[in-house]
Amino acid sequence: MDRRRLWPDFRDARVLFDDADLVVIDKPAGAPCAASAPGVDDDIASRLRRFLGAPYVAPAHALDREASGVLVLSKRRESNRPLAEALESSAEPRVFVAVVAPWAAAADKLVLRHWVAPDREGTLVANDRPSAKAREAVTHVTTLERSGERALVELRIERGRAHQLRPQLARAGSPIAGDRLYGGAVATTLMLHAARLAIRHPRTTDELVVGAPVPEAFARALAQGPPRALLLGDRAALDDALGRALEARWALGHAALAPEPTTAFRLLNDVGDGVPDLAVDVYGDHFVAHFYDDDGRGGSGTAARRDAVLDALHALGPDGVYVKIRPRQANVVDAAERDAWAPRAPARGSAAPDEIVVMENGLPFYVRLGDGLSTGVFLDQRDNRRRVREMAGGARVLNLFAYTCAFSVAAAAGGARATLSIDVSQKALEWGERNLRGAGIAAGDHRFVAADVLEMLASLRRGRAQFEVVVVDPPTYASTRATRFASSRDWGALVEQVLHVVAPGGRVLACSNDRRMARLKMRRLIHEAARRSGRAVAQVKDLSPPSDFPAPPGEEAHPKSLLVTLAEPPAEV
Image (cartoon, rainbow, N blue to C red):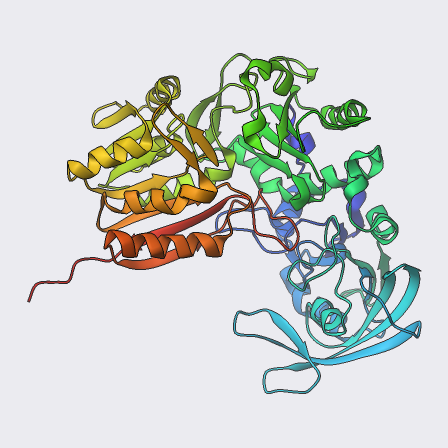
């Protein structure tokens, strides 16, 4: 797979104007104007510096990460101030296009006048009256097209502050489609596009007028509403969604070249990325496509739709594409029909070796792409494994429902004094031991025990075992000869048992993949478990999922994690 073709620094077709002083681009949705994280050079200026071979590139203004369209960047430090002044004083207002809903404006033209200021969390809010920190924002709105409750509108900024359009339209009762922050209607992305900009060139003083065509996705968002039809044969819509996903995962695509490389991540995350019933993972040079439906078998036309998706994925250039068919209710899977759920051979392209190594923040893990529904590592826990690695130094770490022990490897790499990995599957634990050796870590005080987790917790409690870090990431359902576990019924009781073996001041990484388990319920169950176990909780901290697992619009992310810190015992006087 050619990663540089999939994730180039930039694409020439998006350069609208370029000279010695400035460059104007059609910024793709998903590309950030500021780096997404410290030390990550995925911001648009860094990418353009490499693409143009320019020693200096800096944005003259900003666009929201999920917005697209005309963006001006300076190529000389001396141009920064003249460009900013030219943008501020331009006689021609900047022109944006947006899809909004609901749109009930009687007139085709109106003026939005608000006072915009950040709230306590830093989110911009538009109000009808002035305040000390607010700036007046005036935007002229013209209706271009209507479709039911939705409308395509043109927005011209007369005056105001950066990023005023989203809070203004939300205040007017018509948030931009795809705007998760302000309650926008469902759409594949934020339907806001910078369509036209006019400025005086900072050196020649010539008038420069630049426009960027409105993406085709806007017409689909206006006509179709929610993107449920993306798997019903609309190849253009699917290609568009994949293009946005590639842009959103640019930093991860390049992470294979980082000093501590990552080569496995989620490319497309179901409704969170605007494509219902489909998720796509990258494992090295191969893709794994996950198809979701009610029973895993699908209805009329399902095979044809899957073939169309597989063709689109293969066209991106992976060495091969594997298929996993996943019912929403995981416990309906019949192990005897494993090859029907997860064929051993790829559906497109060439096969990977039976076992390959993928990297995650510099740690190697063995995975098997054709060996059932699970591959050997859960990608949605990547950030949590980094967190465990960072807090494991000198700690005794207990890893429950350990599977192939990726958390234990991360803890050991972070300097854990000892780890204990517990899982009912001896085969999975042997896989975990190989992961530990593959990371260059001697077994030493790292133990692997095949046992029922609930029984083992009781045994550890009787033995007064104590751990500074405990990872509890149970499956939604689990059955052994001794016990049956259902997350909806037993998650709180499990946490109670865990708290008995946590050292004072210790921490518990408590996770749930149960779609029905709300984060607020998890917090309540933790506090109830603490009361029953007689343990004092100092803090319960919400942990965000990785950026490649965006939540469905208006919903919580599927993977949910909380970091629980127990109180230290009172100091003796």
